[in-house]
Image 1 (cartoon, helix red, strand yellow):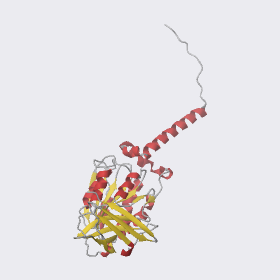
Image 2 (cartoon, helix red, strand yellow):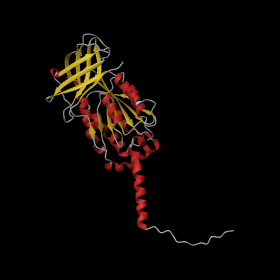
Image 3 (cartoon, one colour):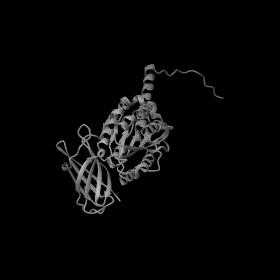
Image 4 (tube, helix red, strand yellow):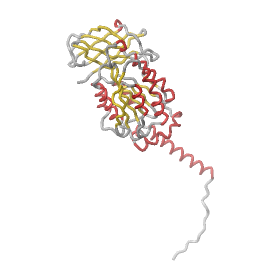
Length: 348
């Protein structure tokens, strides 16, 4: 048996070095957590996504959280409609440098070129341009689906701001409208089918569902389904904070369905997110995009969009041959001393 006598000197570490080590370790852990929560990976991971809403107080310090939109000096072709044989309507919006919509568009300031689905020139001629609100004979000129994100990462104050300020958007739209309400978490929740009752719409907006994962693309697909067969101007208003992590549909499939059925997406982004997907959704469907890091000012953004919707213009034009849908439309509008241009392509 071998006996080892106790003894030896104690290892001494200065207190300041110990505290410095703990501080650096904590700093490293916070840095890793910050990256995970603010990255695409964090948005696509259901556990990390659920942690985001508890860190809303850090939003002030997030370097990427700056308000932005693409409302200014814009021309959008929201939709196309066949009115009669060789007679068609384009639904467009035009905004100035302040993001305010043009209320009147002179047909002499508009140029259009239309090709058919096989590329043939259609010799389009503009008949007239009128604001959408002038079409009093249309019983339901506007239909939209409100597609709302109730994923675990949504900040509580953002959800409350959306629910409490939605009336600013609804009340800003003076035209007759019908709206459906779709809310998504790990699945799609049908809250309200198309209704023309504004109080019923706002009550549905207020209805909460459980905060879970993010079936964004499935929610979008359901929104298109709600409005795709409606006449005249139809669109989706999307409120969301993150990337999809629970859908069977894809970004490409949703964009294609929106394009096919002339359903633009008006996006309001919140929280910590990668904006590329949301910009792609709005740009590819001829909608608008806005990012609202400070939801206490959401009422101002809702009013802006409401004013644009109120002043959508209808460009009536004729062609030398009939068609159900064009191949491309090239549009230019003179506004404020400059020429705004937009090209929209419809794929079979």
